[in-house]
Image (cartoon, rainbow, N blue to C red; front, side, top):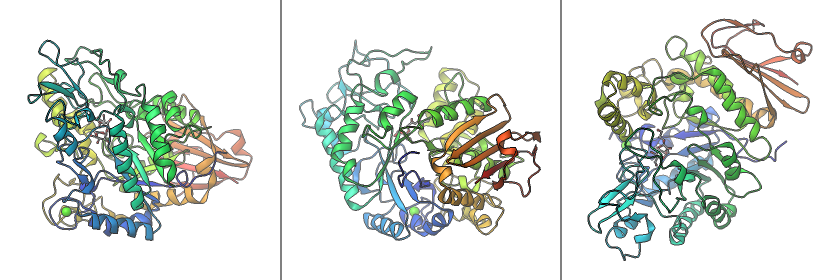
Length: 555
Ligand code: TEU
Ligand code: CA
């Protein structure tokens, strides 16, 4: 069994603060709103709250473009509000982790304001500046948010690198002044008493300074991935960060590592390497992508999903720890993508929770997932708010000639805004999220799907998730047990076992709307077993009903 740690036994709830709870009627969720809802989270069984960025920001990318790391954006409240939140959460026995966005800053951060002033400014090397080539960009790299990854700056007639929007210039991590500034800032937050960090695109911080052109897949730009992801010095810098900062506190860290492979993930998170505690891998988020990357309306294939999740369960089992997530603020809603939000919403939302949260790793749940909230399904482009969505719409309809209606379909499937509509608290105007005008429309289904309906209803999705988390807290086998996939070639059922000492779990999940049959394996037939949790009221043995999930325990 792996070494025990509190973060392995915890449930993490992600708050996207803009859309969580508005306390003052300006249409934007805020810190006081979060404080009001702490009891709701405690009741759900949450141990750790991860809050997406609440720092000073011009909001080009909803706070992932930070202009001051040590101030709170006034829309969200004040530092006093934050201190109050931290204190109240701690009093209730919950921890708080913050988003650490240090691959890039906002172009309005003081460092960049200085940096762009002149070539000899003392902050010049805080960012990545290059001369153009033949009157054009230094190379062909494309930004992940569309267009070139280089922005020309007239003032000094040079280009700066931005993997995301041009208002998110990349920091130069090869400059030790930058690293020390970041460490100082991290210590400042940790000394305040926060309990850790989720580190935004942390595997992008070390770039190949030869800046070669990237491969282009027929498009206008080349792929910067091979020259920026998991770069030459990234592990050296994380070890340095660990030694200087992280190791001095009892905290948890999770790296957001786009496109990470098993081999790289092991380097970031192995317990004997002193870098991070765990990383988010995204292979299961790419199973429905298509010719235009994530912009598609494909449905995932269950056999592939099982392969991916099983690979991560098995490969990390000795020295690393998994993260378990179906969704976050960059992904569509879990029940819309992996379940069935039309005729089987509640039952399939419960099935998805069972399937994932009975695995080994730390569960992450994104706000609203515990209610089975669905995609936004906006009909018109003007209802969207996300710059990535607008840029992709432009790019794909204008440059690649994709039909506009088809593109709207893609957005309904995959746009980040699907998960960013306001939390649905009750059936009053704007779902009880705000008394003003929400910054993004509330999903029309709020009279039916809301927290108020669910908290006191024993059969609700909310109370099912509450039970799942309670079981994790009660049974070591769910946290630490070995995982084994059964039925790898079955495209309708996800079946696996967990085992710890003499205890065993058998998890059976139907990913279809059909009734199926499944005979439990020999080892579970002869012994006394009981249903630990199920999303149906009774057990029909071999008959597995639509989206049925059941877990047998042998103890
Ligand atoms: O996301 C990084 C990342 O890989 C995403 O940009 C991803 O490619 C995209 O959202 C899915 O298409 C992080 C944050 O989670 C995201 O919200 C930020 O926009 C981004 O970094 C830049 O900070
Ligand atoms: Ca507000």
